[in-house]
Length: 208
Image 1 (tube, helix red, strand yellow):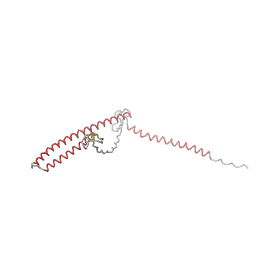
Image 2 (cartoon, rainbow, N blue to C red; image 1 turned 30 degrees about the vertical axis):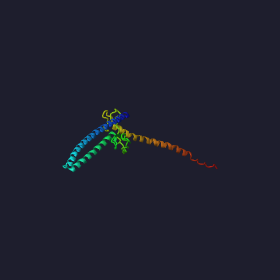
Image 3 (cartoon, rainbow, N blue to C red; image 1 turned 45 degrees about the horizontal axis):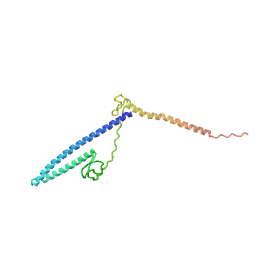
Image 4 (cartoon, rainbow, N blue to C red; image 1 turned 60 degrees about the horizontal axis):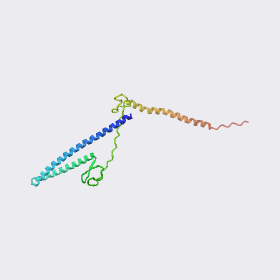
């Protein structure tokens, strides 16, 4: 039983590790694609902003349009920076605020410019939810499916075994009760005998 439980735990650990790697790869691909799209948008906005500025210099442009394009560029660049920070977090790295060098997340000083890095606030770890352990059939070793009452391979009855385990403590308690009463009675008998032995003998009347 313990052997099958051990195998189940190892398999679950491997599956969880593979799942986490796949999730990280998917997220990395998504963020990289969004960064590329945002940078392409910024290039387009710069082109339109340049045209708007040229039109303003020529006396034919609209200042409000140029301001809107400038605000759009600033917003898009802020979005790219946020995406890059998210990507760095997935990759376990950080960037120096002075020279933008890529550093390990735990770095205290920049390896390029020597600037001291700001401390990263540590979030308290949330306790993991306790997951029920996999249960295997003691008869054939098959995995118990969805807490079923019987084994799907050999027909072993989990329900009957659980009922027998629940009745066993009650039977033991009933058996222990008479034994405890007998022990108490045996302990009380010597005390009664000793009490009888200690009673003084009645004095006999003198002969006349």
